[in-house]
Length: 97
Image (cartoon, rainbow, N blue to C red; front, side):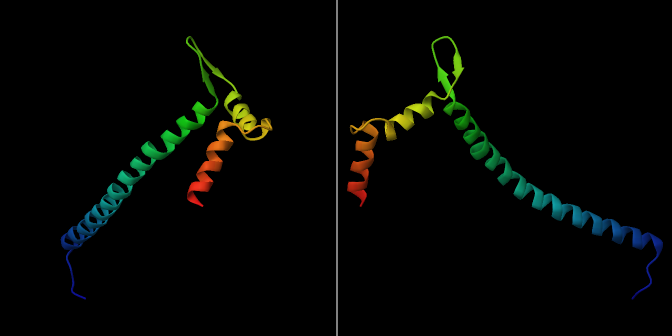
């Protein structure tokens, strides 16, 4: 191992730190961009969809309610007659199966 002066050791350590910093900045920039896309286009969109499932919008206000879920429950299980939803699902299964 060669003998380095104190000045040379400082420059070598500084270069190592710069290389490590550059490496981690590159990794963060690649992963950070993908994380930003994931947050914007997946988490925010789905969070908004969940909120909208509990909203009933009228002309003046927005009411927080379970009406959408009760309507879907009644469409699936409520009446003995074939509702539009059951008929649409039946036709879909006939077409694809």
